[in-house]
Amino acid sequence: MRSLFVALLAVLLFAVPVMAINSVEDVTAGPGNFIAPTPGPVWQPSRAILFDNGPFVTDPGAGYGGADVSRVQSSLGMSVYGFGCQQVSSIIVADDFTIPASETWNIQSFTFFNYQTNSGTTSTITGVFIELFDTDPSLGGTPIWGDLTTNRMDVGGSLWSNCYRALETDPLNTARPIMATVCTVPMTLNAGHYWLAWQETGSLSSGPWNPPVTILGNTTTGDALQSVSGTWAYIVDSGTQTQQGLPFVIQGEIGGTPTEHSTWGAIKSLFR
Image 1 (cartoon, rainbow, N blue to C red):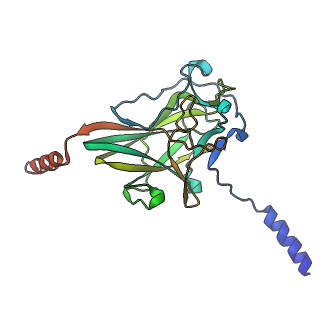
Image 2: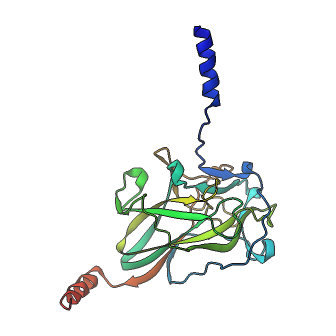
Image 3: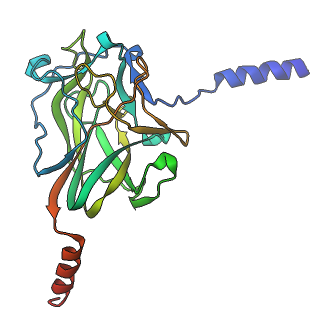
């Protein structure tokens, strides 16, 4: 009887599906489907760019239909299409930026670059969840703004970037169209070094994924982090084991000094 119970238990254990935590999509995922782009709007920055964390377009106009390509540089040994930040799997990514001394930034929006495999050029991204840290979250940084429960994505704010993520040996592949996803989050930040952390949701089963900062001829492009199962680590290309950055854009304007903001706030309050 005991042996029968053990046998049944083994059957049940093998029958229960295990949810995989997908932190990376690399070349083992295969090429994906061919999907011809459909006519539609393409993202264009609508505000002044305060900060750009790095490029991802490597071959302008070299993709299908004259679109741009973000090349996975397999000739250098690189193999990652994108890094996961799926809220459903509690995966978080983070990267840093610095506001120069004596400057104050009036931030209007953050734009993130993401994709879901086989989505077509109509975005399937449904949410972006943001936290801002006062220092490296892997070293005990404290969140100073935001949370990972409030969707900050603009309504209709995710559009095709006119770029595909593709292997350099397959530049016309259309399976991974990169979206630009805008989050309007007005805030004022003083000079300092900050870490931006985010998660994403989408309507497809694959991803969302974030392509790395990509620079031709370079295998190391930044110092982004990824938290999987609560443990932070630098994100690295699985082929070269080199650290990668993640592209994002901060839009807004450079404001006055903190004293000027405080004084102007006091003056405005007199007329309320």
